[in-house]
Image (cartoon, rainbow, N blue to C red):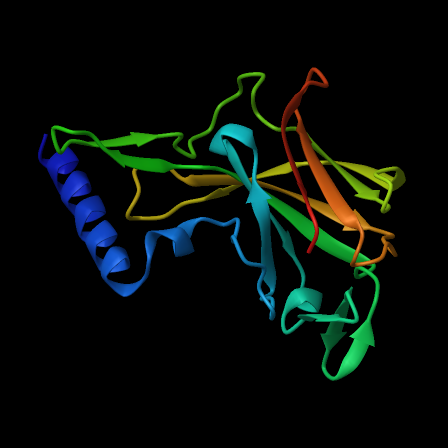
Length: 195
């Protein structure tokens, strides 16, 4: 009982601190307005229903700048024009944890990142680069590796999934579609967007 009260109090204090420093919309990984300068971890979105947050990770994305000139999207890094994805990067997938305050003031935690061997666990990721007509110019499927990070503050380890994507030379201005696939081949969720 005491541990539960402490955990709920910790979450409420954390929420208050975060809320005091930034607007809640900043916590959503899918920005309404695209960033001009990207970081090493580039959030690309959340699957339908908010089930999984997906990001691309590589030092390549750190400092990558996006501009629009003459109606065309261009990318720059370290003062140089860049037109293609890096040859290799990681796709990181994490099950979303939602914090909801009910009308009675009770905090409900759902969608926790605890281990599950149910068929809804993502096992593969499929990336498709789409041209201007929506036709796939390239498709890569990779196995997702489960990563468990033990945090002393949490009673359960943080669970997320990653896959290394290699041999990519697709244009940065192509639309990217990411599908999460379970062990039976079912699509668990999809994110589709331009960088």
